[in-house]
Length: 71
Image 1 (cartoon, rainbow, N blue to C red):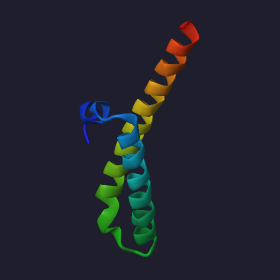
Image 2: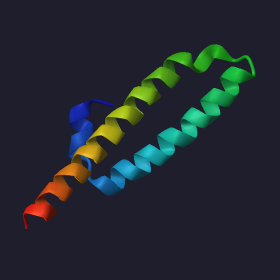
Image 3: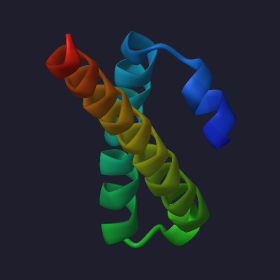
């Protein structure tokens, strides 16, 4: 998922995406430990997507905190 697409989503949608990605990562980690290395590329992509979502959510939280302090 591109960063631009992540920024276009609202916070509720990002939280849902984050929950889904976290679940997928759990299942992929489990499969890899069982010896199925087919999901390694997808695992890496999901980790990056998760990081992008967390970054955007953090930026929004920080921006909301700054505007709340100014007001």
